[in-house]
Length: 191
Length: 375
Image 1: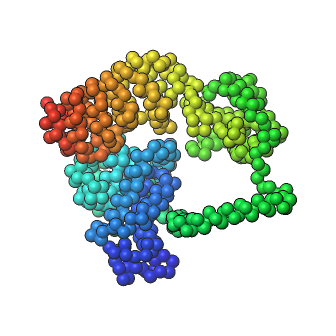
Image 2 (image 1 turned 30 degrees about the vertical axis):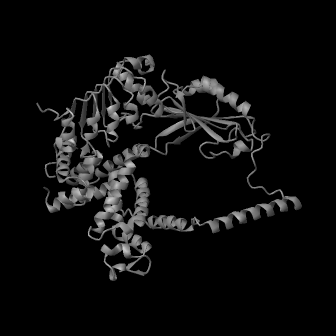
């Protein structure tokens, strides 16, 4: 497999757990090629805005470039990268700037809802659930995204978000209640 | 738990929401490489190269000065300098601004505006933000510009003002939902391109500086005035500064308007005047702690899903504060032991004891920490 426009995949000689020993630019190429999509999708679940997702993804890449030396091989690269991305999103959401784009977010949400009209009833129900998940406050939304979109276990979510497992469980349960309220109890029993 | 198949279907729904096309684009790599190149080009902090650069600049400036002295400058200046006798005199512009500001109020109808300022140049368009159609009128005052040639939105910029083509440009925009706003563009006294904006919520800004609110008696945001009006059961336009002293209990929530307004600095100054506030509840938002500590008579304070709670020790400054209620804490577990220093707090209620730490220290200080609803 080639990485970075013709360079040999550094995995040939050093596994990704040793990524801090790779040439930094090759490491970033590798991160974008192998984990860029999942990271950008996670970023989007926090920001719900594609332009802002692009910006925060750039900040994420810069942070990875700058902090690559601190990566300890015992953690999985994917979870290390996702933790950086999640922290970037939270820093951004705490800033006053993000409120400026909320109106645009709403428009995108309504567009997503429109697209649901074109799909089957069964899919539409699921789409309603996902739409409702995207309307949850961040602290619940992030748990649902990691649990049902990234298929992480409770323990993995607690590691990624650096919080107690009991907190994860509580938020999952409270989030479900909130979803039930929003969805009128309909179509949610399966989750 | 959903089955594996259900989970896959749910994932597809997530992907449909986020977008089925790949989010990673070639521009992501290009932007990063641009950043990297820029980073590499940054000058080093070593003294020798810096001194060499400084010396080179001095030599170049000297050489240019000598050239200017010996060679006649050809008339090829790309950006004409701002010359006082080319631009429309600021005094004239200022007079017109004053006239507009004393006669125009946001919310005026098209008929009212044309009765004041004439027909102007009407135009139509669509909001870039939400696609909503609008009708607008542009007024061009002073200068030698062809009066039918629109400046906004196609030629925004300072050049026609510097060239003296126009002295002042005034636009009023009406959306279909009756929302309207307006702005004035001009060069200020220092020849800086400036915009005065009249927001649909009454707020008037000169660039980023808040000038006032034309719709209310308080020079605050609409969000603030509406919050206070609700607390008082009074019409927002009738709320006065004296009313702030009457408020004893206040519940604050995020703006329900589509604009997701925030309290601004001018609002904070009004909050600080609420000397008789004894109960404050904040749901889904929070005021800066620097503002909260001004409520010297506060006895009960509630944070409900208010985001990250920080600098709680500041609350120890509130000598009347007896009860704090914390619901849906975001940054769990929250260390509340810092409140043990308070001389007044008697009770802290939380919706879940697992969401806080430092309870023992508080209990040693005689402060009861209990779950909401517990006996």
